[in-house]
Image (cartoon, rainbow, N blue to C red; front, top):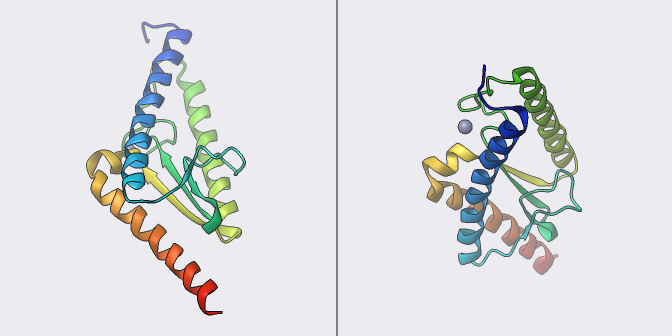
Length: 146
Ligand SMILES: [Zn+2]
């Protein structure tokens, strides 16, 4: 059994979440430095994407290993294990629904794992900016030449 009560456990888990926000912040700063102007925490879009380029129909989600149930790193707390298993599997289902919605409506969806950012943030930033720039350029040429 866990020695902390339910409330304390919830507080600890919220801290886990805010560690994830630190990662979002690093990505935002890097993209901004490269001149990519996004909106953040876009509540008007399904699933409130962490970043979005609305004009170009691009959404970016940065998924924390715990809250999104990463197979490699998500460890369920010992206390209230059933509660957490249910909660995390609901989150995963929601992620699938959200992804499906964007794929079906011709959005570009980019999902990034927390562990990818921790392992190699440069690679993540390069990939995001490459994808975004390609889309912006193709939109630009479409407007320009047709
Ligand atoms: Zn992970």
